[in-house]
Length: 233
Image 1 (cartoon, rainbow, N blue to C red):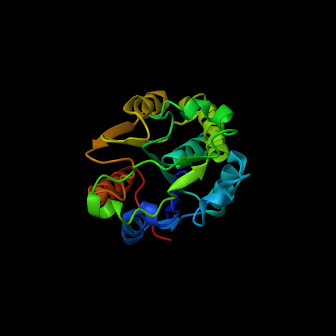
Image 2: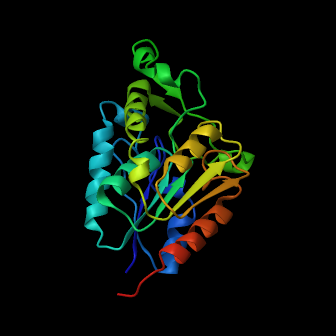
């Protein structure tokens, strides 16, 4: 059976933020594993004291629990964790949706200093559709110290990307108020994959929660079927 590890983003709900995609993959015949990265799926305060190494440890354990062949489908900060997995563990296919290799907020790089005077940051507006926005399951705010861990992880990723040679798909949200287009394109350009694709959608940051969620899920599924087809047991 072909196996897929799905990794959510920072402050994301580990299940709900992935929208229709996991079920679409399962219906196609993939075994899908969705680990909860430490500090997520409960309350923002549970991110206090969590380090990026904790996120990677849980993702690594989940990834190694899956028999090969294995693929990675990742969102935002999860794409940073996934990039480290792909570079160090190998993968059969790598999907990076809005990889968090940079940030729109000009205060983001100052978080290591601001954490002492601004203990929390407000969550970004990650859903554009007004009705869908009401049901956004992500944390409305987050500890500044936890975001510092995202920055630490972010700095590790660029040297790793050229080591990733598996087929790769990178998705950008055209109205992303969290991750700038330049950061997503840099992620794509640094990938060492000889077979890689880049697609952009009329969406806010959370591609799988916004109005194009079904289209995104079907496109990711179709791409995986082509480069990493499901195998029978």
